Length: 258
Image (cartoon, rainbow, N blue to C red; front, side):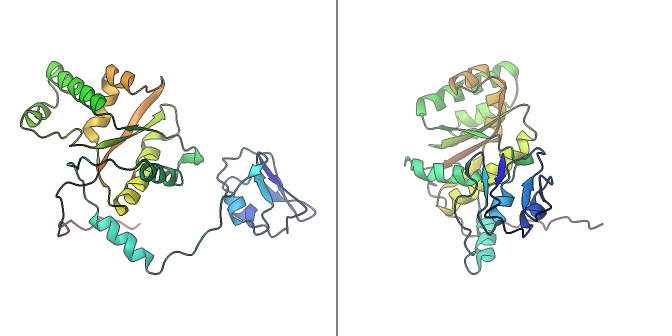
């Protein structure tokens, strides 16, 4: 729980203003105190405290000081968003694990319903397991007469499900999480932007996400716990001869202001 060191607290009240559920208040001595209400551990209070007076469960509640954003940061972010592409064919070159981990660690800072952060990650590198999963998916399509386009595409040397030589990032959540689909999408989007900034191509695996939940063998080989679902997958790797020169024409956002 949140603990305020009264000997450090200056009574500025900033922590009480940023708390989303009024867990903190100023007492009669003008010091911040915990009311005992349920805390979602967002740590806004500790992040804004100028006196470093706040800890959580007897541990430091903050990691490091914030830094000013680089000059013209918004232009760089906009360029990254506009130039982001979906890549499906990758070189047979391993993506370093520290780059993947750094992207997923960064994704832990993404917004999450009530600060739950329910997403857990599986990184699938094994070519053997990828092939087993692909075989099961094709068999499922044949037996159930669904997504038959995948069978013909695969026969022609194209794999819309997994691409070529991809490492696959799989986001799983408990089914009873507050908002698992949205939380996973936000986290994956955050990780994807950082990966693309590092020169790692990515593509969202819509087919793959659906079939991993439908086929028991897939869940078993990936060791997905009971009560969990796959809510997002991302193919990743170093793009193979895909140097895009132009931005595709896109329609403008449809916006209604009320």
